[in-house]
Length: 274
Ligand code: ADP
Image (cartoon, rainbow, N blue to C red):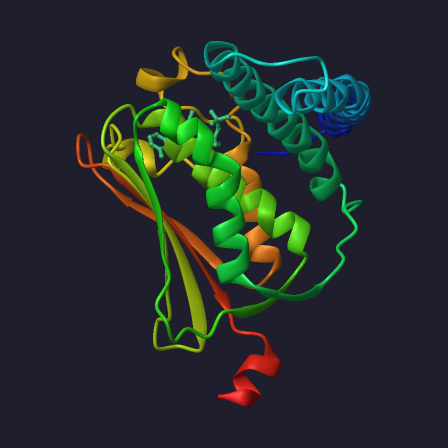
């Protein structure tokens, strides 16, 4: 078949029109993408600002509650002490929630500044025990820490951030467990690391849910309606532990309780000493 000049012309025109359409589509979608990115940035800025503004009043509430408990406003009855302990626990949970909201955007934008130092993990575990003792006791839970006498536990991390990781895990264990026990345990696996486990006798988490648990905003449906939370805690724990060259995970099953764990490499000074 002979291709006439007319055919060639039509062919070129069609090609030209297709090219124009492709360019227009590309421009529109890049504008849309740019717009979405802009909205996303504004949303992050709003969350950061809101979280920042919430922190000051929450810290003030914490201060006043502790003054009342210490008797600065007169004698406090045992019953009132109980209510104040509950109010403190809820306030602490809100502080953690706000910190998580602040941390998430900072980590994702690479704005979180880490102050690295050596830390005894055993000390951090004991301090978490002190922080959550009252709340666990109010729920009637057995609450303990198990640290072997001979343990290598010095890790090179940002101590405040690691405290936040442990607080998130212990807070979840206490929050979701209504009967039985919560235990913080330290062990040395063979590979020059130290492992912290938070073991609870709570509702447990199905294998299906476990796959999604460390995702941003993920909350298990059966428990999410009953507790306050954002689904950010475990996501941040994972980001932070990986930042410190560690691993995080969990062993659980429905009705079998949960063991959340993380492993961190021992600090170089600790490895040299042993
Ligand atoms: P949040 O506690 O704010 O919801 P997290 O990221 O810390 O967010 O936890 C995500 C979800 O994982 C929780 O909503 C809960 O459904 C589930 N979860 C976490 N820890 C436990 C636990 N110890 N026992 C049972 N479920 C848990």
